[in-house]
Length: 367
Image 1 (cartoon, rainbow, N blue to C red):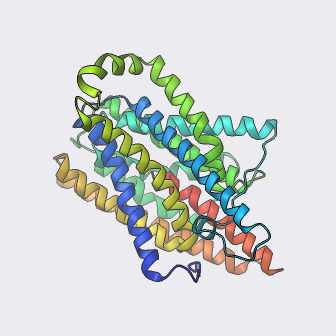
Image 2: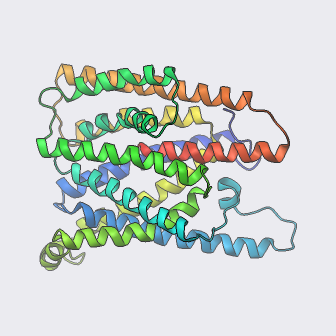
C-alpha cells in the first residue's frame, strides 16, 4: 500500500497529478453530456470514434517518444525520460494468433462499453449514470463467481450497501427514461465484463503493459465505432448537418467540444496510469469516490437535475458504500502483499508491477 518513492517526483507533484486525474475524469463525462445536450451532437458512436482516434494517435506518439528515448539511452549511462520513469519500461509485445483474437474480442467489449455508455447519457442524467455505475463491483463479483474465481465474504458484504443505495437512488423520478435505464444497465454489464477481461490481459498469460494494451486495442475500437456509426446512420446525418451546423467555420463550438472530449479521454488514460505508478491504491480509491461526489454535485448544478429526498439518501448510501468497498479491497491487497514470500528483489518488483496493472484495470472500470 506504499506509494512509489521516485526521487524525481515529490509529494506536491503527486497531489497535482491526482487532482488532474479528478478534474480530467469529471471533464470527460461532462463534455460528453454537453455534446449531447447543449450542442445537439447526439451521435454516441461517432463520439466514441473520436475518442478512440485520439487514443490511437496518442498511443502512436507515445511509443514514438519511447523509441527516441531508448535510442538516446543506448549505451549511455543516463536516466530514462519522464514517461518511462513514471509508467515503467514499456515494450510492445508481438502477439500470436490467439493474442490477436483476444485483443479483437476485448476491443469489441471496450467499444460497446464506451459507445453504450455514451448512448445512455442521451436518455439519463449524469447523476443516474454515475449511481448505476457503482454496481460494477457487484456485477464483477458475480461474473467472477460464475467463472470460478473466489471473492472474500468481506467484499461480498461490503458491496451490499451499494446495491441497496442504487435501488434507493433510482426509485421515483430521477431524470431517466425506460430506454435510458435499459442502456445504462447494458453499460454497467459491459463495464463489469471489461474489468474481468482487462484483468486477464494485464495479469494473465499475456501480461501486457496497460499502455501496450491501449496501443493494440484503440485502433481496432476506432474502426469498430466508425462502422457502428455508419450502420446506425450517424455519419450520414452528420454529413447532412455539417455545412450549416457542425462546420467549425460556421459554428466552432460543437467540433471543439467533441475534439476536446477525445483529447481529454487520452490524457485521462495516461494520467491514470501515471497516478497508478506514483500513488498508493488507497489514494486512488479515495480519489474515485471524490470524483463521484464531484460529478453528482457539478451535474446537478450544470444540468439542473431534480433529486428527491429518497434519491439523495440513496446517493449518499452509494458513495459511503463505494468508499467502504474500496477500503476493504485495499486492506485485502495489502494483507496479500505482506503475506507473500519474498524470494528476491526483482521478483518483488514484478509482483508490485502486476499489482499496479491490475489496480489500473479496476480503476478504469469506474469510467
